[in-house]
Image (cartoon, rainbow, N blue to C red):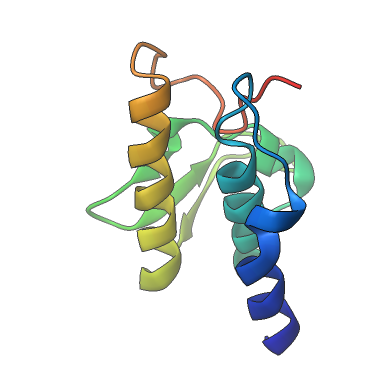
Length: 108
């Protein structure tokens, strides 16, 4: 975990942010956290939408898994806080996007 903590501390320096992609560092940080802590597959991560997170239960609904079945993934409380912080930033930057738009929306 020491290496992971170091990576997360430096993510803002390593991942450039631009006017066209203001959430790039935040998106990368959340992606690393979710992949590391939950075991999500890349395709599952890329398919997540705002509607897939359930704050009261602190869960993610994975709509399209490897075997074409949905599943509910409980999140540790610190990871749920990271998701909620990201969603607040996301909503402030993209307030009009529908809840079923992907979390990983960025422009290069």
